[in-house]
Image (cartoon, rainbow, N blue to C red; front, top):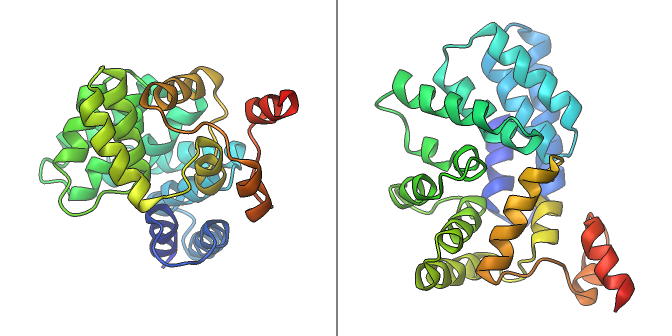
Length: 231
């Protein structure tokens, strides 16, 4: 159930507030760990919820706990590799994802959603390969990273086509609102690489004043507040 709530938030299914969905996921996982404190998969899933809620210290702690309990579970490696890039552990995350693919060569399609370990290490072609081989609709986050990867490689026509699909799903896209909905990136070099992709793709960095008024709970990015202060 916890994983279902988290997935609903990441994919944008339904109209519920993503923060509420991530909080439900977190609370259910804490209950699961009360029932079995040695469940490595529950720790790795809890890391996803904590990161989505910008609770990075707890997120890193439960990542490490899940790895300690079962470092050979490819699903644990998959979940942990999804979030460690955001705290600067980029090379480690990419190695974990490579290992998950080796441990589970008949991996489920959702493994292709683990794009951040590869984007954060500059493996843009691998991002494109993973998103394109995903059956069905990929996650909105993955679609955004696909747009950035095309832009990083100078493939502007492909970036424009992928951007049109992203905006179809997320019509009011700005990097600021996207971060607010799906969690932040505390590691500044990694955040810089994402922002570079956003700019090269011609995506909006900052929310408009109208969007800020429409979504008063939006988490502001400091760089956007600085830009707004000079306008």
